[in-house]
Length: 130
Image (cartoon, rainbow, N blue to C red; front, side):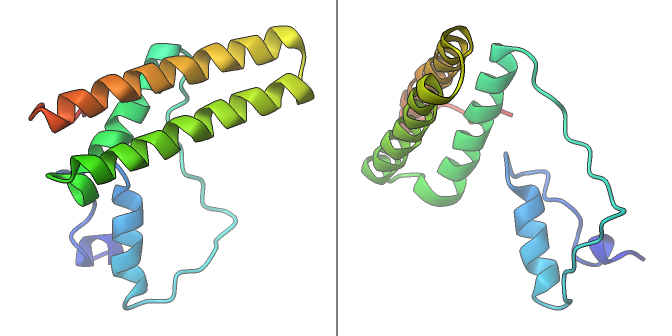
């Protein structure tokens, strides 16, 4: 049996951060070390809709774990989330070309719009994205 199996593998009920949850369980018993020859493949997101879907899933995951029935605290989390996206985008206007920074801003704005939509869906009893 593998260490991952020993701890029940990834929790398929989680919408996000399954790797973090599993890592915490494993590190409670074993020393977790960096191994340079292990490669983890994550799907690349090439379309804005793929990125917005990812962030909806992440917000749904954190809502389920920390903020369910706490809409004001979740709103504070959402505001911080939104401000971080815009801060990132605004910094790009200084460091990259106008064309590229404008595209980055549009992507961040799309992510933020979908996050707001997801917030209202969740606090009104909607299901989290998967």
